[in-house]
Image (cartoon, rainbow, N blue to C red):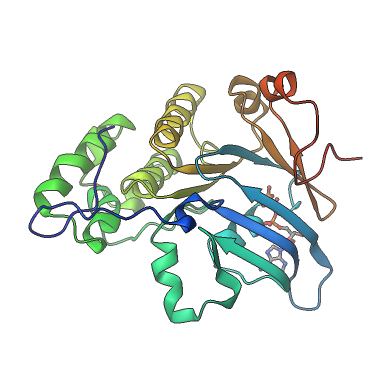
Length: 263
Ligand SMILES: Nc1ncnc2c1ncn2[C@@H]1O[C@H](COP(=O)(O)OP(=O)(O)OP(=O)(O)O)[C@@H](O)[C@H]1O
């Protein structure tokens, strides 16, 4: 996948200056608690950080809170207490009107895809580029290439309602990665595709990560976790545990922030 710069209409690339914020963790939770309405606490004092450029799986039983944690990171939910920092900025204190600017740095693959029904697959994927002011020439250079890569060359003009679950999922993934976000959040991104396509999608996330994107993938798939030796954040009974990859265990002997193995 070719690297995409953030371009002005005249084609020149906008270079972001590196600041101390760029060196901060992509995401950080400090004593975060969450409950829905008057229900029980889903999360109790969760502390963790996602170092910039890291790759983690997010695991836990059904109902453990994976989607809720991703929603907190995408600013679709506010925590009941505690602080969340994204790219070095306390987003729990950010006024609502400033949230879209933070969200534009995040690519999300939702479990229910959230494609726009009246747009073709190509136009759904092109949307983040058009919002960012990328030229149509660039859009038509990059979007078909990515859709071809995810196996949808023959479905670029299709509306979401005519696509299968797995095809919609791949459109959603292409839309999430096309603008090379700083943070990629994916909720069960391989839940609707066969093993061959799942592996291909994982390689897409790995390539994106090599280009600097911090990646967090919620999954139930033991096959993926076994095959790709990345560390895991594991949710259990309202707490989050960091489980190093087998490779890290061989290198590091002390537990990192975020706790050790669940009891
Ligand atoms: N909008 C909501 N209102 C009330 N409770 C909710 C809401 N969304 C989620 N929950 C509850 O929060 C808990 C965590 O749900 P969540 O969907 O985050 O889990 P999950 O780990 O993503 O599950 P799955 O693997 O089945 O997708 C569950 O007990 C669920 O019932």
